[in-house]
Length: 313
Image 1 (spheres, one colour):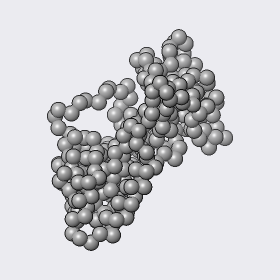
Image 2 (cartoon, rainbow, N blue to C red; image 1 turned 135 degrees about the vertical axis):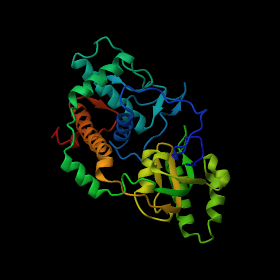
Image 3 (cartoon, one colour; image 1 turned 45 degrees about the horizontal axis):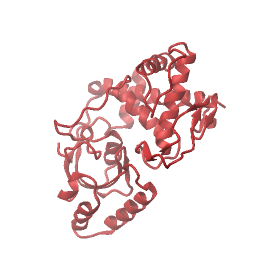
Image 4 (spheres, rainbow, N blue to C red; image 1 turned 180 degrees about the vertical axis):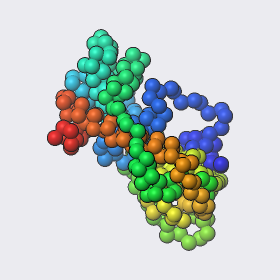
């Protein structure tokens, strides 16, 4: 494993001094799936963006609400991603109250942070409302045959990247235009990688930029899941044809080399496949449940596409 060592760019590598992430009441896989789900409930260009884009006493924001409960303060201007995150959390908090799992006196979250009691109640609610059966042996075998590289052992890629980080106050549209322009420029370059190294040093918000964007050899496990899906989802060599979106921003990625892994026997990955299928089922069920809640709620100032839910229809 290589990488930049910070864990802040998508390569997934960290050093021992990195701060631990706050604990979640959901499992790590469910937490990641929930965040990814919220990000896809509208056409957001980046999977995760900072909550506060602009704030201060001189800024007046439109107030988004769920059943009359404000999601943001008048001085707090949030991007769509942050509003959807808060809206989904508030929908679940109110559903927990209606189910009798949370006191009616529980106070709505401040700046997107709900009470510990609300977090625990939401966990109980999801456990009750989203029962996910174990996948069958046949379903697991079909997945194994259809995704031969999904659990390959030893697969790795030598990577370079230029990170355009999404940070508070950044103009995401202009950032994307700059990243796309660089992507085209680097895909057209035929100079042995010299221009890529120069671009990384000039533009990248990752420490690897000082080494020409070099991340070394990485496996799927070394990368953020959304980064790994793009990098290891094809056999492409060279500068990837499209920007890679991650929770950290936009990446121009070059695959310098690949080493194919060995496909393990089905029996060796049966449990991992079952976990993947359960997670997929959980995400789909959660999406429908959230859209059902949104369809029954008075939603103001935030797009959740509730009307497109098959359950709502």
